[in-house]
Length: 295
Length: 285
Image (cartoon, rainbow over all chains, first blue to last red):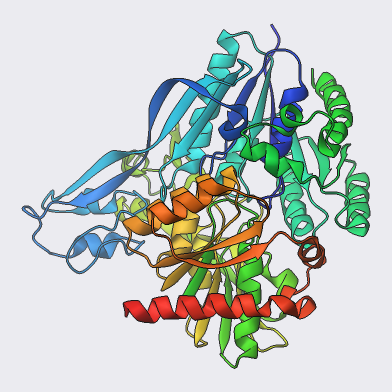
């Protein structure tokens, strides 16, 4: 039996077009596949792919400490052992500062601290408008554990994909290079690194490439809004060449992307003849070739 | 006064507004400090071009095990809430990427088999720009998962300046929260799209829950997006300013230049935003 290939779209910098471009490529693809939105902080892919939610699962993150007033003797030991400064002078734990290490719970001589797993978000399992397996999650604002949620989401997705006999999972990632991104690149077959010809996007891309090199993950480059600054686009191509990364292509700036998004559609659904859709057709060709190589 | 720029969705213009606000205020005679807390992808320096005067490593605690003292009671392994410790036979495995440096293992070991160690997870870079903005940036080491210690270290350099401008990371989870938590005011930068609105809603929900004063800047306006306007009205969100979608801006930003220096016609909009947010901050105090 063949394994499941996982591809994740990342960019380092946010707002470069990960979700819109992934959506467009998805619309061009034939065959059944799975789609996962790993941007659990700010999940947006469902807004253009649509999602008929069939199942919701609660997600429990880290445990949080709470001091019971009736038992607390205000000895102050909990404050001494809290490295995060989460307990104030009134012996109240600030749930936003608390990282859930449990030191106060372990050391309290009066058993006044409760240490309970709290619900930190929801996992949604369903299907896209086109009927493909689709999973996304919403982490409650202010929560930690985004990495753990991404991991849980991906495990769930792989299980479901296997049940449906799928061989490909497309994933949308978060901006940055920290915990949710690391959880979304772990063990994937391909990272599509999206970049704009913009000083900050190039800077952030280089940090992302350092990360994918560090984890030895195959990476392909895709340039969005390539015509905004042609000289920087040329530099991006040079970066791809020097690092030996396949270039999936260049997509010119297309104002229709915003219109499509406002209609709740991918750019390809919205206008097959748009500049972006035309460019995506060429990108898709190269993308399919790389996917073939991954088999 | 600490003003944080945040957004939920990435790429809406946080850094643009933070950088240009810092630039404007420094020109207006304020002593300004720019604090880049987007430690995973810190970009403010690309526009402000500070002279970096010092680079301070950020170190966190890690446990070091002296196995000759260990009696294999496994208390450290069992109490570690982050599952960073694992005992394999008579060997201790430590997964540093899972460790939160809470020191519980150090404190709980009765045999003194756990000692204090440290490792570097990033740096804080400190400098000054040619317009005398004090520049402080947290920079997470690539491959590190937890931005929090770097955010905290950069924040601990606070103090100087009349006004602190904070460039917060995208998202709505812990790094965003840690960056805006002790600010006096949060400027949320959004774009009039379904993605922008969806992520804005999460930020607003959170800021309201902690009673943090905030206002909204709508960036890259083009065409109609009534859903955002309805949302703003229904939730009584103060709008501090608006910026149109302008390809000249995109070009200036792509080159890493300061918008207000290149396109001074936008200066009045930033002045207006500052005037409104100042009124809101003082109105509350």
